[in-house]
Image 1 (cartoon, rainbow, N blue to C red):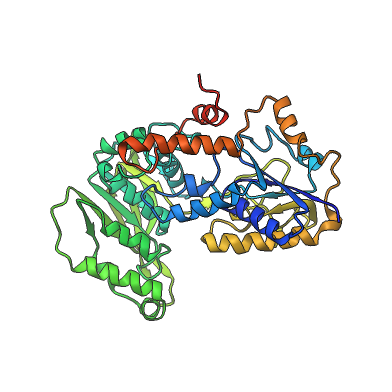
Image 2: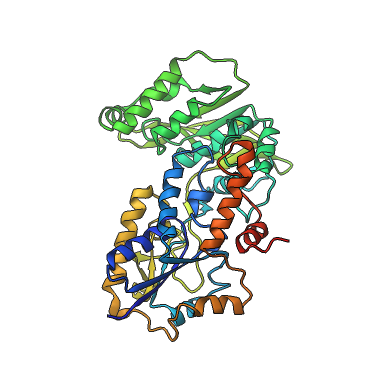
Length: 452
């Protein structure tokens, strides 16, 4: 049986799980896997898409680290697919490739005024407070009243980070520039808007509870949002997750308004209609009041409301990015595929090309879904031996030589260990787990041990 040389583009959870599953499936170890990652550090959205005050994420990071630290998967960081390495390169050196590049862009919200100054995508804000090396180090936090559009976990993450006092984030790994930016924020009110009712939310009970634990922040709910229709009442009675969410919301409704310096408002039955502006800047958020249909959906009432805002964050979903020479579904923001096998516009299978994770199925599902998703893709890879590419030079030493010949300053597993240890040491004097390095050049220099 010929040895499988597999490239995986994207070193987040989806890519790492795919590599791990394949190695466990091929007990004879007749497989060689190289991970390519455009950032100098691995872990994808686990490192750059989750708020720093989520301690539970450490368990996922530890599991991913254990896979990489076995040493049977090579990683090439700071390598951009389509620039530093191409599809032709992969065909020359591998039997197949799996794309696990995720979905890191904000989905569009097509309403008037969405492009005004002061209107932002949630993903961009998350990248900023997570010290993503490809975003500016400064973020404009000048608004007193802020709207967050969306009712998923990302919306609550954004709302919590905006409302939370910066000093309460000091035990986390946020870098100094993020701390300073949040510390100077004049925000007093953060409003979260959902199109449907409180029994149809997409966030989890854990995310919701975290809002109520914020120091010096009052939760504000509105009685008009809790006249439950039959479908909502049924969801509360039959869905354990919705039952817990309802219990938390009802508890907050009964609490007397406090004297906190900041307030976090939850609005339901609010369909975004327009971002209002003056002189090119956001001044208000306009929405249409909706009502329940009785079947779990909503319909417009025609009643338009407006609240003063100086900033708007849309958290209405993530969207994948197209990849050079790879089919892409512009509507869904994914690589078109069947069970992970990539197909072109005519529906024909593209030999040797596969997808897993959010770029395969869209930005839905948690870590458990990512694992099962990777397993499905790996099953297709192994079943397709007859259609694999036949590489001219499958030698393992060919890839470092290729990257070096192009002047690519790639990072490897040892380099990630150096960066990891450096960030941990930065945090030690402050009794913090780590302080992230957010500058790409610094990350590369530390990883490659080329600091001046």
